[in-house]
Length: 404
Image (cartoon, rainbow, N blue to C red; front, side, top):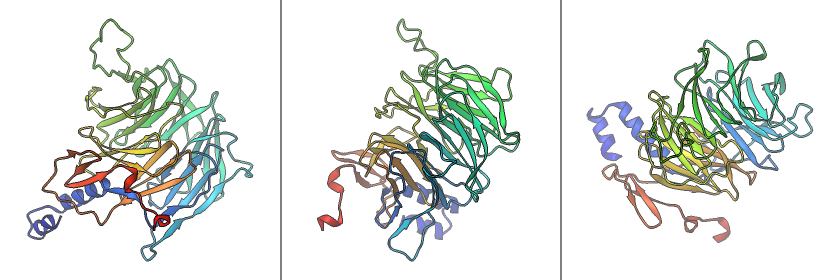
Protein backbone atom coordinates (compact mmCIF):
# COMPACT_ATOMS: atom_id res chain seq x y z
CA UNK A 1 0.00 0.00 0.00
CA UNK A 2 2.91 2.36 0.73
CA UNK A 3 4.25 1.86 -2.79
CA UNK A 4 0.76 2.49 -4.14
CA UNK A 5 0.58 5.78 -2.21
CA UNK A 6 3.97 6.79 -3.56
CA UNK A 7 2.84 6.06 -7.13
CA UNK A 8 -0.30 8.08 -6.51
CA UNK A 9 1.73 11.02 -5.19
CA UNK A 10 3.92 10.90 -8.29
CA UNK A 11 0.84 10.88 -10.53
CA UNK A 12 1.40 7.34 -11.80
CA UNK A 13 -1.91 6.07 -10.43
CA UNK A 14 -5.36 7.56 -10.81
CA UNK A 15 -7.23 8.53 -7.61
CA UNK A 16 -10.04 6.05 -8.26
CA UNK A 17 -7.53 3.18 -8.38
CA UNK A 18 -6.33 4.01 -4.87
CA UNK A 19 -9.93 4.17 -3.61
CA UNK A 20 -10.75 0.86 -5.26
CA UNK A 21 -7.66 -0.83 -3.82
CA UNK A 22 -8.42 0.35 -0.28
CA UNK A 23 -12.11 -0.57 -0.50
CA UNK A 24 -11.13 -4.04 -1.73
CA UNK A 25 -8.61 -4.48 1.07
CA UNK A 26 -11.18 -3.46 3.69
CA UNK A 27 -13.91 -5.68 2.26
CA UNK A 28 -11.65 -8.74 2.42
CA UNK A 29 -10.08 -8.00 5.83
CA UNK A 30 -13.04 -8.16 8.22
CA UNK A 31 -12.96 -9.21 11.84
CA UNK A 32 -15.35 -9.11 14.77
CA UNK A 33 -15.35 -5.55 16.11
CA UNK A 34 -13.38 -5.14 19.33
CA UNK A 35 -14.84 -1.78 20.35
CA UNK A 36 -18.34 -1.65 18.92
CA UNK A 37 -21.39 -3.83 19.37
CA UNK A 38 -25.14 -3.64 18.85
CA UNK A 39 -27.58 -3.51 21.75
CA UNK A 40 -29.40 -6.79 22.29
CA UNK A 41 -33.11 -6.13 21.87
CA UNK A 42 -34.43 -9.35 20.36
CA UNK A 43 -35.19 -12.32 22.59
CA UNK A 44 -35.50 -14.68 19.64
CA UNK A 45 -33.87 -15.33 16.29
CA UNK A 46 -33.08 -12.41 13.97
CA UNK A 47 -34.26 -13.04 10.42
CA UNK A 48 -33.52 -9.82 8.56
CA UNK A 49 -31.35 -6.69 8.61
CA UNK A 50 -31.18 -3.57 6.44
CA UNK A 51 -29.02 -0.42 6.47
CA UNK A 52 -30.64 2.78 5.26
CA UNK A 53 -29.23 3.66 1.80
CA UNK A 54 -29.53 7.44 2.15
CA UNK A 55 -27.44 8.20 5.25
CA UNK A 56 -26.00 4.84 6.22
CA UNK A 57 -26.84 5.74 9.82
CA UNK A 58 -29.71 3.47 10.82
CA UNK A 59 -29.98 -0.31 10.95
CA UNK A 60 -33.34 -2.10 10.79
CA UNK A 61 -33.84 -5.56 12.25
CA UNK A 62 -36.74 -8.01 12.37
CA UNK A 63 -37.11 -11.06 14.59
CA UNK A 64 -39.00 -14.33 14.77
CA UNK A 65 -41.28 -13.01 17.55
CA UNK A 66 -42.49 -10.14 15.36
CA UNK A 67 -40.31 -7.48 17.00
CA UNK A 68 -38.78 -4.72 14.84
CA UNK A 69 -35.95 -2.46 16.02
CA UNK A 70 -34.13 0.58 14.62
CA UNK A 71 -30.51 1.10 15.72
CA UNK A 72 -28.29 4.15 15.39
CA UNK A 73 -25.02 2.73 14.01
CA UNK A 74 -23.26 6.03 13.35
CA UNK A 75 -19.65 5.77 14.48
CA UNK A 76 -18.44 7.94 17.38
CA UNK A 77 -14.80 8.65 16.43
CA UNK A 78 -13.66 9.72 19.93
CA UNK A 79 -15.07 6.66 21.69
CA UNK A 80 -12.95 3.52 22.03
CA UNK A 81 -15.92 1.37 22.98
CA UNK A 82 -19.50 2.08 21.97
CA UNK A 83 -22.79 0.21 21.84
CA UNK A 84 -25.13 1.00 18.95
CA UNK A 85 -28.36 1.52 20.82
CA UNK A 86 -31.92 1.06 19.64
CA UNK A 87 -33.59 4.34 18.68
CA UNK A 88 -37.06 2.82 18.67
CA UNK A 89 -38.72 -0.60 18.67
CA UNK A 90 -42.01 -2.18 17.72
CA UNK A 91 -42.29 -4.58 20.65
CA UNK A 92 -44.76 -7.25 21.63
CA UNK A 93 -46.86 -4.74 23.54
CA UNK A 94 -47.32 -2.50 20.49
CA UNK A 95 -50.80 -2.96 19.01
CA UNK A 96 -49.37 -2.75 15.49
CA UNK A 97 -46.73 -5.46 15.98
CA UNK A 98 -46.67 -8.43 13.60
CA UNK A 99 -48.32 -11.44 15.19
CA UNK A 100 -45.82 -13.88 13.74
CA UNK A 101 -42.22 -13.98 12.54
CA UNK A 102 -40.92 -10.94 10.61
CA UNK A 103 -39.13 -12.28 7.55
CA UNK A 104 -38.03 -9.06 5.81
CA UNK A 105 -37.53 -5.42 6.75
CA UNK A 106 -36.41 -2.78 4.26
CA UNK A 107 -35.90 0.97 4.29
CA UNK A 108 -37.63 3.09 1.67
CA UNK A 109 -34.75 3.66 -0.82
CA UNK A 110 -35.02 7.46 -0.83
CA UNK A 111 -35.99 8.48 2.71
CA UNK A 112 -35.55 7.13 6.26
CA UNK A 113 -39.03 8.44 7.10
CA UNK A 114 -40.52 5.17 5.88
CA UNK A 115 -39.72 1.47 6.00
CA UNK A 116 -41.51 -1.78 5.18
CA UNK A 117 -41.87 -5.12 6.92
CA UNK A 118 -43.43 -8.45 5.99
CA UNK A 119 -44.28 -11.46 8.07
CA UNK A 120 -45.64 -14.98 8.08
CA UNK A 121 -48.85 -13.43 9.45
CA UNK A 122 -49.59 -12.65 5.76
CA UNK A 123 -49.18 -8.88 6.23
CA UNK A 124 -46.91 -6.42 4.44
CA UNK A 125 -46.76 -3.15 6.38
CA UNK A 126 -45.52 0.27 5.30
CA UNK A 127 -44.38 2.15 8.40
CA UNK A 128 -44.13 5.84 9.22
CA UNK A 129 -40.78 5.89 11.03
CA UNK A 130 -41.47 9.04 13.05
CA UNK A 131 -44.90 7.98 14.33
CA UNK A 132 -44.01 4.27 14.31
CA UNK A 133 -47.43 3.29 12.99
CA UNK A 134 -48.36 1.57 9.72
CA UNK A 135 -49.26 4.06 7.00
CA UNK A 136 -50.47 1.21 4.77
CA UNK A 137 -51.06 -2.51 5.15
CA UNK A 138 -51.27 -5.09 2.36
CA UNK A 139 -52.88 -8.44 3.17
CA UNK A 140 -51.70 -11.49 1.24
CA UNK A 141 -53.50 -14.82 0.97
CA UNK A 142 -50.58 -16.81 2.37
CA UNK A 143 -47.57 -16.33 4.69
CA UNK A 144 -44.90 -14.04 3.24
CA UNK A 145 -41.29 -15.19 2.86
CA UNK A 146 -39.74 -12.07 1.40
CA UNK A 147 -40.39 -8.69 -0.22
CA UNK A 148 -38.24 -6.16 -2.04
CA UNK A 149 -38.40 -2.59 -3.36
CA UNK A 150 -36.36 -1.37 -6.32
CA UNK A 151 -33.44 0.82 -5.18
CA UNK A 152 -33.49 2.90 -8.39
CA UNK A 153 -37.08 2.96 -9.67
CA UNK A 154 -38.41 6.34 -10.83
CA UNK A 155 -41.36 5.17 -12.94
CA UNK A 156 -42.98 2.83 -10.44
CA UNK A 157 -43.32 2.28 -6.68
CA UNK A 158 -43.87 -1.46 -6.71
CA UNK A 159 -43.00 -3.92 -3.97
CA UNK A 160 -42.37 -7.49 -5.09
CA UNK A 161 -43.76 -10.04 -2.61
CA UNK A 162 -42.77 -13.72 -2.36
CA UNK A 163 -45.02 -16.00 -0.34
CA UNK A 164 -46.23 -19.58 -0.01
CA UNK A 165 -48.22 -18.91 -3.17
CA UNK A 166 -46.69 -19.82 -6.53
CA UNK A 167 -47.52 -16.31 -7.75
CA UNK A 168 -45.47 -13.16 -7.17
CA UNK A 169 -47.58 -10.23 -6.00
CA UNK A 170 -46.73 -6.64 -6.94
CA UNK A 171 -48.03 -4.01 -4.50
CA UNK A 172 -48.17 -0.33 -5.47
CA UNK A 173 -47.23 2.22 -2.79
CA UNK A 174 -48.95 4.98 -4.76
CA UNK A 175 -52.39 3.36 -4.85
CA UNK A 176 -52.12 1.28 -1.69
CA UNK A 177 -53.28 -1.88 -3.41
CA UNK A 178 -51.85 -4.89 -5.28
CA UNK A 179 -51.57 -4.16 -9.01
CA UNK A 180 -51.02 -7.55 -10.60
CA UNK A 181 -49.38 -10.94 -10.14
CA UNK A 182 -46.61 -12.75 -12.00
CA UNK A 183 -47.39 -16.36 -12.89
CA UNK A 184 -44.77 -18.93 -13.82
CA UNK A 185 -43.56 -20.78 -10.75
CA UNK A 186 -45.23 -24.03 -9.72
CA UNK A 187 -44.46 -23.92 -6.01
CA UNK A 188 -44.02 -21.38 -3.22
CA UNK A 189 -41.81 -18.41 -4.09
CA UNK A 190 -39.11 -17.95 -1.43
CA UNK A 191 -37.23 -14.86 -2.60
CA UNK A 192 -37.49 -11.87 -4.92
CA UNK A 193 -34.90 -9.23 -5.82
CA UNK A 194 -35.01 -6.14 -8.04
CA UNK A 195 -32.07 -5.32 -10.29
CA UNK A 196 -29.93 -2.40 -9.02
CA UNK A 197 -29.55 -1.10 -12.59
CA UNK A 198 -32.80 -1.95 -14.45
CA UNK A 199 -35.91 -0.75 -12.65
CA UNK A 200 -38.30 -3.14 -14.43
CA UNK A 201 -36.18 -6.29 -13.96
CA UNK A 202 -37.11 -8.64 -11.12
CA UNK A 203 -35.57 -11.99 -10.14
CA UNK A 204 -37.36 -14.70 -8.17
CA UNK A 205 -36.45 -18.06 -6.65
CA UNK A 206 -38.88 -20.81 -5.72
CA UNK A 207 -39.40 -24.21 -4.13
CA UNK A 208 -39.83 -25.57 -7.66
CA UNK A 209 -36.01 -25.19 -7.90
CA UNK A 210 -36.39 -22.48 -10.52
CA UNK A 211 -34.83 -19.04 -10.80
CA UNK A 212 -36.75 -16.70 -13.12
CA UNK A 213 -36.15 -13.22 -14.48
CA UNK A 214 -39.16 -10.97 -15.12
CA UNK A 215 -39.79 -7.77 -17.04
CA UNK A 216 -42.87 -6.43 -15.29
CA UNK A 217 -43.82 -4.31 -18.36
CA UNK A 218 -44.42 -7.38 -20.53
CA UNK A 219 -47.75 -9.18 -20.72
CA UNK A 220 -46.21 -12.60 -20.10
CA UNK A 221 -43.77 -11.13 -17.62
CA UNK A 222 -41.18 -13.91 -17.58
CA UNK A 223 -38.07 -13.21 -19.63
CA UNK A 224 -36.36 -16.52 -18.95
CA UNK A 225 -35.98 -19.42 -16.53
CA UNK A 226 -32.32 -19.89 -15.74
CA UNK A 227 -30.83 -23.33 -16.29
CA UNK A 228 -27.93 -24.66 -14.23
CA UNK A 229 -26.87 -26.83 -17.17
CA UNK A 230 -27.12 -24.02 -19.73
CA UNK A 231 -29.57 -25.97 -21.89
CA UNK A 232 -27.68 -29.25 -21.93
CA UNK A 233 -29.65 -32.33 -20.91
CA UNK A 234 -28.08 -34.43 -18.15
CA UNK A 235 -28.44 -38.16 -18.69
CA UNK A 236 -32.05 -39.22 -19.22
CA UNK A 237 -33.43 -36.78 -16.67
CA UNK A 238 -35.58 -34.01 -18.12
CA UNK A 239 -36.36 -32.55 -14.70
CA UNK A 240 -32.85 -31.09 -14.37
CA UNK A 241 -33.34 -28.90 -17.45
CA UNK A 242 -34.46 -25.35 -16.70
CA UNK A 243 -33.89 -25.63 -12.98
CA UNK A 244 -31.36 -23.31 -11.40
CA UNK A 245 -30.62 -25.61 -8.45
CA UNK A 246 -31.23 -29.20 -7.44
CA UNK A 247 -33.08 -27.85 -4.42
CA UNK A 248 -35.18 -24.86 -3.37
CA UNK A 249 -33.87 -21.42 -4.32
CA UNK A 250 -34.10 -19.34 -1.14
CA UNK A 251 -31.47 -16.60 -1.52
CA UNK A 252 -30.73 -13.99 -4.21
CA UNK A 253 -28.37 -11.04 -4.52
CA UNK A 254 -27.30 -8.92 -7.50
CA UNK A 255 -23.78 -7.56 -7.83
CA UNK A 256 -23.52 -3.77 -7.68
CA UNK A 257 -23.30 -3.38 -11.48
CA UNK A 258 -26.42 -5.51 -12.00
CA UNK A 259 -24.60 -7.77 -14.49
CA UNK A 260 -24.32 -10.79 -12.21
CA UNK A 261 -26.83 -12.54 -9.97
CA UNK A 262 -25.86 -14.78 -7.06
CA UNK A 263 -28.32 -17.51 -6.09
CA UNK A 264 -28.35 -19.77 -3.03
CA UNK A 265 -30.05 -23.17 -3.00
CA UNK A 266 -30.88 -25.95 -0.57
CA UNK A 267 -28.65 -28.21 -2.67
CA UNK A 268 -25.87 -26.47 -0.68
CA UNK A 269 -24.69 -24.60 -3.73
CA UNK A 270 -24.09 -20.99 -4.72
CA UNK A 271 -24.38 -20.13 -8.38
CA UNK A 272 -23.34 -17.01 -10.27
CA UNK A 273 -25.41 -16.02 -13.32
CA UNK A 274 -24.84 -13.70 -16.24
CA UNK A 275 -27.98 -11.54 -16.19
CA UNK A 276 -27.69 -10.47 -19.84
CA UNK A 277 -27.40 -13.97 -21.32
CA UNK A 278 -29.03 -15.94 -18.50
CA UNK A 279 -26.08 -18.34 -18.50
CA UNK A 280 -24.62 -20.14 -15.52
CA UNK A 281 -21.05 -18.81 -15.27
CA UNK A 282 -20.01 -22.18 -13.77
CA UNK A 283 -18.00 -20.53 -11.00
CA UNK A 284 -17.42 -23.22 -8.35
CA UNK A 285 -18.05 -21.99 -4.80
CA UNK A 286 -17.93 -25.47 -3.31
CA UNK A 287 -20.41 -26.73 -0.73
CA UNK A 288 -22.17 -24.14 1.44
CA UNK A 289 -24.63 -25.57 3.98
CA UNK A 290 -28.21 -24.31 3.54
CA UNK A 291 -31.03 -25.83 5.61
CA UNK A 292 -33.70 -24.22 3.40
CA UNK A 293 -36.39 -23.54 5.99
CA UNK A 294 -36.68 -19.85 5.15
CA UNK A 295 -35.43 -17.04 2.96
CA UNK A 296 -31.72 -16.39 3.52
CA UNK A 297 -30.33 -12.85 3.17
CA UNK A 298 -26.88 -12.79 1.62
CA UNK A 299 -24.90 -9.70 0.66
CA UNK A 300 -22.33 -8.57 -1.91
CA UNK A 301 -19.74 -5.85 -1.40
CA UNK A 302 -19.90 -2.45 -3.08
CA UNK A 303 -16.88 -0.88 -4.82
CA UNK A 304 -14.49 -3.80 -4.37
CA UNK A 305 -12.72 -5.54 -7.25
CA UNK A 306 -13.31 -8.44 -7.18
CA UNK A 307 -16.65 -8.43 -5.38
CA UNK A 308 -16.89 -10.16 -2.02
CA UNK A 309 -19.96 -12.24 -1.20
CA UNK A 310 -21.08 -12.70 2.42
CA UNK A 311 -23.15 -15.86 2.78
CA UNK A 312 -24.73 -17.37 5.94
CA UNK A 313 -23.22 -20.84 6.36
CA UNK A 314 -24.65 -22.53 9.49
CA UNK A 315 -23.19 -20.53 12.43
CA UNK A 316 -20.62 -18.69 10.27
CA UNK A 317 -20.61 -16.07 7.54
CA UNK A 318 -18.60 -17.38 4.60
CA UNK A 319 -16.68 -14.75 2.60
CA UNK A 320 -16.21 -15.62 -1.08
CA UNK A 321 -14.35 -14.07 -3.96
CA UNK A 322 -17.24 -13.76 -6.43
CA UNK A 323 -14.94 -13.76 -9.45
CA UNK A 324 -13.36 -17.17 -8.92
CA UNK A 325 -15.50 -18.74 -6.18
CA UNK A 326 -12.66 -19.01 -3.65
CA UNK A 327 -13.64 -19.22 0.00
CA UNK A 328 -11.42 -16.50 1.47
CA UNK A 329 -12.29 -17.12 5.12
CA UNK A 330 -15.17 -17.61 7.57
CA UNK A 331 -16.44 -15.02 10.03
CA UNK A 332 -16.90 -16.91 13.29
CA UNK A 333 -18.75 -15.44 16.27
CA UNK A 334 -22.38 -16.55 16.30
CA UNK A 335 -23.48 -19.40 18.56
CA UNK A 336 -26.29 -20.57 16.28
CA UNK A 337 -27.34 -20.46 12.65
CA UNK A 338 -26.88 -17.14 10.82
CA UNK A 339 -29.99 -16.03 8.90
CA UNK A 340 -28.99 -12.72 7.38
CA UNK A 341 -26.17 -10.32 6.68
CA UNK A 342 -25.97 -6.86 5.17
CA UNK A 343 -23.02 -4.85 3.85
CA UNK A 344 -22.36 -1.20 4.72
CA UNK A 345 -21.04 0.38 1.49
CA UNK A 346 -19.64 3.52 3.16
CA UNK A 347 -17.40 1.77 5.70
CA UNK A 348 -17.05 -1.77 4.27
CA UNK A 349 -18.63 -3.27 7.37
CA UNK A 350 -20.91 -6.28 7.65
CA UNK A 351 -23.76 -6.79 10.13
CA UNK A 352 -25.07 -10.32 10.67
CA UNK A 353 -28.02 -11.71 12.63
CA UNK A 354 -28.83 -15.24 13.71
CA UNK A 355 -30.85 -17.56 15.88
CA UNK A 356 -28.69 -16.65 18.90
CA UNK A 357 -30.56 -13.28 19.02
CA UNK A 358 -27.32 -11.37 18.45
CA UNK A 359 -26.44 -8.77 15.82
CA UNK A 360 -22.69 -8.90 15.24
CA UNK A 361 -20.61 -6.18 13.64
CA UNK A 362 -17.66 -7.13 11.46
CA UNK A 363 -15.32 -4.29 10.58
CA UNK A 364 -12.04 -3.96 8.64
CA UNK A 365 -8.88 -4.76 10.53
CA UNK A 366 -7.02 -1.48 10.18
CA UNK A 367 -3.80 -2.97 11.54
CA UNK A 368 -3.56 -5.67 8.91
CA UNK A 369 -0.65 -5.17 6.53
CA UNK A 370 -1.46 -6.00 2.93
CA UNK A 371 1.24 -6.66 0.36
CA UNK A 372 -0.19 -5.93 -3.07
CA UNK A 373 2.79 -7.62 -4.66
CA UNK A 374 1.42 -11.01 -3.62
CA UNK A 375 -2.03 -11.12 -5.12
CA UNK A 376 -2.15 -14.86 -5.51
CA UNK A 377 -4.36 -16.64 -3.02
CA UNK A 378 -2.52 -19.59 -1.51
CA UNK A 379 -4.37 -22.41 0.19
CA UNK A 380 -2.91 -23.32 3.56
CA UNK A 381 -3.74 -25.85 6.23
CA UNK A 382 -5.78 -23.55 8.46
CA UNK A 383 -6.44 -20.59 6.26
CA UNK A 384 -5.81 -18.76 3.02
CA UNK A 385 -3.52 -16.00 1.94
CA UNK A 386 -5.23 -12.96 0.46
CA UNK A 387 -2.97 -10.24 -0.93
CA UNK A 388 -0.14 -11.70 1.15
CA UNK A 389 -2.08 -11.89 4.44
CA UNK A 390 -3.03 -15.21 6.00
CA UNK A 391 -6.56 -15.26 7.37
CA UNK A 392 -7.20 -18.24 9.60
CA UNK A 393 -10.70 -19.49 10.25
CA UNK A 394 -10.28 -21.54 13.41
CA UNK A 395 -11.41 -21.11 16.98
CA UNK A 396 -7.73 -20.90 17.99
CA UNK A 397 -7.69 -17.29 16.78
CA UNK A 398 -10.18 -16.21 19.46
CA UNK A 399 -9.12 -14.04 22.36
CA UNK A 400 -11.26 -12.76 25.21
CA UNK A 401 -11.05 -10.75 28.39
CA UNK A 402 -11.72 -13.91 30.40
CA UNK A 403 -8.54 -15.47 29.04
CA UNK A 404 -6.56 -12.45 30.06
